[in-house]
Length: 248
Ligand code: SF4
Ligand code: FES
Image (cartoon, rainbow, N blue to C red; front, side, top):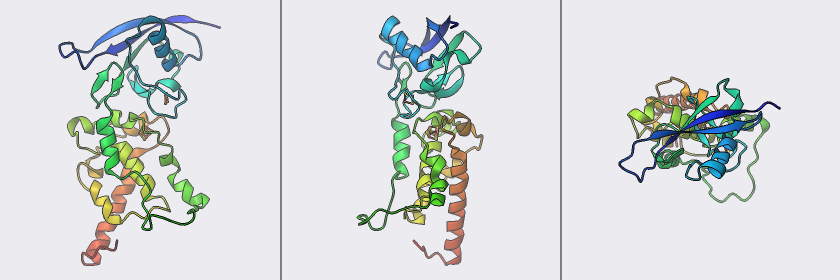
């Protein structure tokens, strides 16, 4: 089996050291086929530099905690093969649009704040249903891609809007909202979509589609933005034709 030593240039920063700018540290690590970027990071931390900080948990592209910029592209460290780049220098940086706490660990608070805003759970008129609410296969298919979201924030990091407007709700939250709007069991009132009916919401999207490129689970947040815009227009025109009377 072929093996080579690669250089991993990793952005280092400690938010508690106020007088020090971010800088890169290089590590040489032997790479064998099959070694993921996450395994490289674990090796560096365990064998070379115990001060290196990064997040991980499942190691199998499920928990969403290891998203970062790998050679200029956002991806999950645990699903990216170190030998897949055709270069023996690999640069690792934290997710953009979020403050660095330490090295590759970012403060996810703004991401979760936006996520909470859209009420990311099933809403029923009767809060205590006595039996389960079944779905047909067709109904389940409508939400398939959005259910796959693992909340890794890759799309949020790739989006150009949060850096201009930190109050922009962002692609992951829109994808989750659409997941519930399309869910046959959800009964949230249409008027609740007003929460995303402005430039901080779905009308703030620049439609550059970077969220789609960045998503490791093939979710297309832009589809959700288009879907929500359509829902809002439909709701608005219905409201106008019913002389301002809200049906919900
Ligand atoms: S939509 Fe994709 S990129 Fe965005 S949080 Fe969900 S899984 Fe991650
Ligand atoms: S460690 Fe869970 S997604 Fe990478």
